[in-house]
Structure formats: structure tokens, C-alpha cells
Length: 389
Length: 204
Image (tube, rainbow over all chains, first blue to last red; front, side):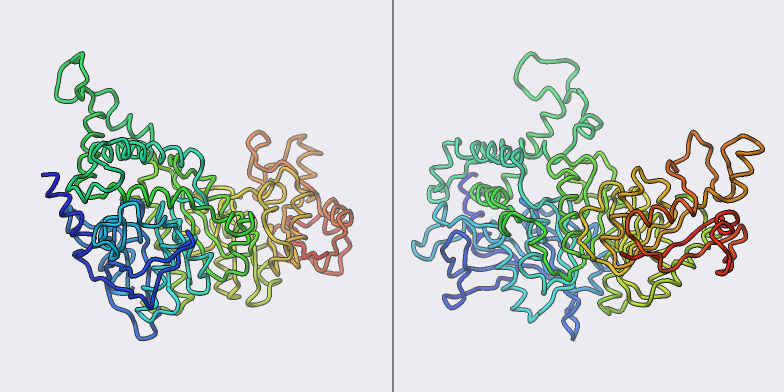
């Protein structure tokens, strides 16, 4: 069973159920780590069609455990796309009107080059031989994909959490290519607390004997227990205490009384175990290490001499930031400091804080106020951009 | 401030002061009525700063560039002379530190436009003099204990503050109880007595 899943991980990394763009030795990806990745590939999905002026493209950046299947049934899980509530024909991001692109990030595990991909030098999965990937590297690769479509300027780049970091990086390092930017529930850097949670997750993966120093796929194994624990810990940070209490309280799971053992007595335990188990079905443990590291390393101000406003100097991009009151992973203050930097840079910026008890994950859910803000922002930007209805 | 549109004749006066295609920051943008008016009639590049999150969310949903923030604390994040005009409409009296706020407006904008209710209006004076009560009028609908307006001033007080801050009054307009402009030839005391609202165009 584990061997089967290991084989599937390898297959999905090399031959995904998505279009794939290959970059040969003539087009290496320059990495912040000081080396290059070559050859490499990007797996992506698109929706709608590009207009003649190539001015209606929207790039969606996915979060840590997301993928390119933003608005179609996910081929691995069989579930709806992770942002289908927002994106699709007639939806707020209307694919009858916009050309939507979503690519698996470099370092991911659904077809873009990542640690589970075959290293052409050895014929085996990269494992830890893959150089460390940063948010800026991911964006650099996405820019090459956007080049491939002949798109000079994206109408909009949007995403939440790690996707929001990519949006900020796009706006900072390719500002002339971004007409408007929508970073949601994110920050311009990862806080110490966020790094701490990620480190717990990574240690859980690496403590699993099935991890084999990162070479588990060579042995047809996967560190599923470690990865499940990592997911359980992380999942708590995506919710709020109030929402956990509302949903689960101290309710018992399928039993009348405490069992005086270590079984999942409480509903919350059972829920977290389920979250852990379903996650390992669809995600690669080494990818989890690489992507959490990319988020930890992200510090946009540090990349610009310590002053965040300098990251956006002279920008003409229109920004809309969104945060959620109960998000303790990327609290409102993180968004507000970006807003202040954008003010100092003289940028056009809107900022909405949405009252909800659903925590960080609220950006993935059906939140009417979020949709109203996105709708208002996109519609007005489209008017200014001259995109007709 | 929650004043309905019919009473906001000052908005038209403000709009008349702003040339087309200007860069405008509206401090205390409320539900976005002025920004929308300016975008429709003057095609300005408009931004707003608003204290109430509800107001902000409504503005953004309507496509306006507005952020949540406090005039007393958040103006310092804006660059020097980042805007052609900074508007503070019916908000000065609700700030904790009007002097610092006005100073910031003059720093951020090439021009500042400030409108405020005149506490020197005869009705206000009448209420205090005859009734001995804090005035509650059409323009100032709050009771003393629940008003957000903590720093009222008269037109004369405001002119003094402008002098103190080294601001030049380029234009001033007073509106009477019917929203009519008071004649330019009238002396300050007349404005201060009959002007219910005042709109100042300032620069430094």
C-alpha cells in the first residue's frame, strides 16, 4: 500500500494530469541559493481564453499545500478545485471573461519540478539533492510560464497565504508586469512563531524512520506518520480557537464516556487524525519540507535593504489586501504593515479586514465579504484597464 | 461622520476646488460618497482613509481604493507631497489632535481642503447663551455625551490655527443654514456668525 502510494507520488511528480511546460538546458531557472535548476518543468492549468490584446490574464498563486487545480476537479483527491467557489464561468473571477492561469510551484509535488521529480543526473528522485527553493524562485519560474503565453502584463495576480507571498514578490520584482495585485491573509515575512510551527512539522517528518534521510522514494516508502503529525500541528494554526470550540468543544467521538486510554476520545482528535491521514494521501513529505522552508526564508523588506516601502518604490500596481480578524498565523497587523509601506511608496492600495471566526483558512471558504471586496476591486481595476464586460 | 447626503452641500464646494485628474486623498472617507463624486465628475486618482471597517469594506466593494486607518495615527505613513489634494471633510472636529492632523495634511498634499461645522454659528451661540445647553442642531445632531466630535472650533479659531501652522488660506467658503455660499465681501465676523459650515483651501 505504502509502496503503491510512493509510486504514485513519483508518477504525479514526473507525469502529472496537467499540461506541462518543459524548460531545457538553454532555459535554466536561476535560484536564490546561488545555483541553477535545469532542466525543469512547470505543471499548470488554464481556464478561459486569452484575448487578442493578451490583457485579460489572471495568475492565481496557490498556498503551501495547494496545487494548480484551482477550478477543476482535483485528479488526485477527486474533490472540487480549491478555489472553485471564486473562480469559474459566471463566478466572481469569471473565466468567460478572464484567462486564469494557475501553476504548481517549483518545489511542489504535482508536476512542477520538486524533490519527488526524477533528477536527470541520477535517474532517481531528487530528494534533498534539490537546491533550496525560495518564493522568489517560484515567481521567477511563473514569469517564464507567463512569457510562454506571450503575456507582457498580467491583469491580476492573486493568492492567499504562501500564494499571497508570491503575489507580493510579483509586485516587488516584476511590478511592471502586474496591473493589480490581491494578496490575501499573508505577510511580507514569516514571523518567528510561524517559523517555529514549521520547524515542528519538519522535525516530525524527519523523525519518522520511513523518511530515510529524504531518500524514501528510492525504497518505495513514505514517512506518512511524520507528515500526518506535521499536518495536524499546522492545521490547528489554520483555524481559530473560537471556531474549534464552536465546531468541536469537548464533544466525545462516537462514545458516551472517556475511555481512560489514548484513543481519539474527543471529536477534535478524530478530526485532526483524519486531516493528517487524508493529507499524506495527496502530498509529498519532502515537498512539505521545501515549501515550508521557502515561506520561512521569505522576508521582502530584507531583500530591499530592510525597508519594505523600497520593495514597492515607484510601483503603478493597484493593490488590495485582505486579512481576517481571527487569523493568528497572518494577523491583520502583518497586512497593515504592508499597507503602510505601500502608502509610503505612494501606491494605490485598498485594505479590507474581514470579521470572521474561521481563522486563516477563511480565505478558502465562502466568505461573502471577501467575495464582495474581490469583486469590487477586480471590477474597478478592469474598468481602468479597459477590459470590457 | 454620519451626516446624510442632502446635508453635505460642502461636498460640492470641495469638488469645485479640485481640478480634473488630480491625485486626491480623502481622510475620513466614510461610505465613499465624496470619492465617488470626485471620480465621476473629475476622474481623479482617489484614495481614502477611513476609521470604520464597515465603511472601508463597503467602499472597496464599490471599487474605491480605501484603507482602514486613523487620521490621528496613520497619516505619518504617507509620503511628503504624495497627493495634489488631501481632503478632510467634516472630520477635523472628531480627531484627537487637530493641530497635528492639519500639519500632516499640509505635508502630504500640495493643497489641503478642510471642511468643518462652525461652532461660532449663531444657533450654537444662542443655544449656549439662552438655553444654557450644548447645541444639538441639524449639523451637530449628537448629545454632548455620545458625540464623536471632541474638538469643535469656530471659523476664527481655525484661521488662527492655520496662521500658527504657517498655512496660507488660498480660498475659504462659508455656507449658511440653507447651504448657500455667504458673499465673499462679507467680513470674517459675519462668516463666523452666519456660516454653519466652512470649507478652506490651504497650502504651505
